[in-house]
Image 1 (spheres, helix red, strand yellow):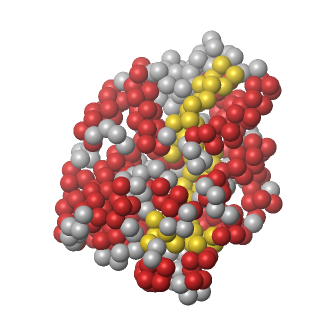
Image 2 (tube, one colour):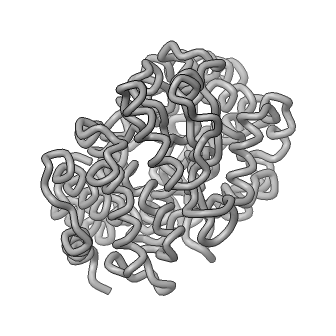
Image 3 (cartoon, rainbow, N blue to C red):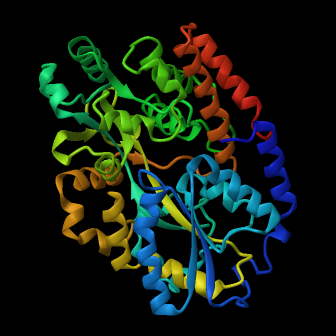
Length: 438
């Protein structure tokens, strides 16, 4: 994220004060329809690059225009810019009609009042709430409120491994625990001279995804049940230290990964520079980058011991992309028609196949493509061992504050500076001080 934490706080404060400027509709989204033939759509970067996304999306948008007469103006927004662009749009009222959001941001953006609430009536306009799987709906906004967005793509983290490197290093099975992952990473480094695991250390959101899962494995949630930041608990500190130690102590992540921020670790894995990758639904990107499906294997992401499951055995966040509508849209009916189109069975199959993700629509999941060994493993993770990040208004600030703290700790590790329990706790305490006071 490009803004400073102070600037982010100022933006969010402004959001709370400027909600009426975000649109002319009622609380249930009564926006005008004085621009019935056009829509603007901000799509998140799902493919290996923006050009891949345009290649996937433009034929589908043309199909929608042919069916409805509504032209959709597409912009693919990089993840490094997306949240800041959305926050700016909520204050200015000059945003798109329809947009993709990371599902972890749902409650934070919901709190601005700028997005259309998907109440019963609005859900019925796209076929009903019960079309969507429960795990996807859990990341659409704060509990007890009408969702701020609709699930579009569902994803789960898994461990991808290079079959040839494993074979040549004498590793017969993918690691199931963190101890086994460290051992495999060290063995590949010793035998083949390549790093064990890739990471995106300069990407705060990616850092959060990893330490949130480790936090669950250490019994920490980073927020109290009342929604108050709790970054310095024993479990939270242990989770962050364990992740940073993969570079600092265990030496299975290359120091250069501390500077990675946008798919470089995926590229390294595809090119055989690392033996393992923890990533959410990487198959389509790996293929785009030239790696054959036969060259990699997939296994559940590691746990501390035993097998993945609920509670301390959580091994993935409930990852995914949601689709939202700005209440300030000048084409509310068209915007809802577009959401209905994109979440319809036909498009759900086309788009999720293209990206290697899982449809959050129950009926679309019945397609045989989503019952291969790889897609079945991802569906199993989402159903049994994934957890949603906290759906609280301060979640986006949590991603920035703690994700940036982890980024700085990884930079210390890369530079050879000592990373201790005390220094981790101090970094997390500093992050907690940057959160809104309750």
